Amino acid sequence: MKPLEHPKYNNRGYYGHMVDNTTIDGLLYEAIDIGHNFTSAPGSWIISHDSSLCPTKGKIIIKDTRVGNNVFLGLNSIVMPGVTIGDNVIVGAGSIVTKDIPNGELWAGNPARKISTTEEYYTNATNEDGKSLYLLDKITDFTIQGRDKFKESYYDAKNKNN
Figure 1: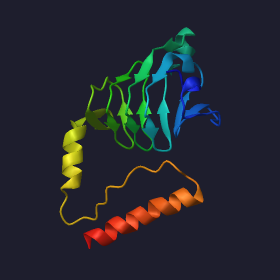
Figure 2: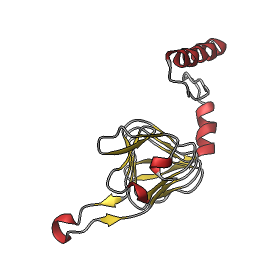
Figure 3: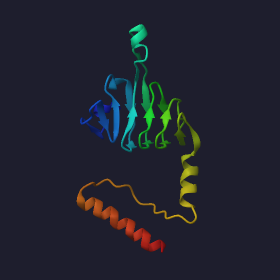
Figure 4: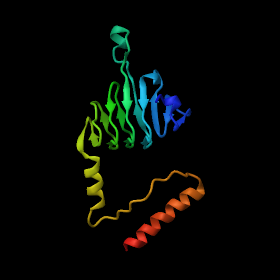
């Protein structure tokens, strides 16, 4: 769906529109589609234009950019113009996505590349030895009461593992 129609739309962006914690290209947000259950960390961007030809040719390149369903964009990640991100994808923090990402994969780096499938990542994360790991349900209520409930679930999990 278009950013302005997205349930996580928030018109507070300085350089563009905001969906969740992501800045959506302010020049032409209509060239961007974002699926359902999209989640992102602060500082991430999805862009649809390239102005590098402005000084020499007076032209701006516009490419349709698509983000699928159940996608997570990590802190300060960038999705470049023309990229299609499939469903059930994780993009790691600081990544610059320059190529299409198939369904069910975790990509990270600059430029981003495949690290694993999302299922492999989940299995590996839940089997780490010697590190504190608590799988909690995602927080959806950001009120003081909601954060307190989330914090309580962390302490419950921590006490169960000790």
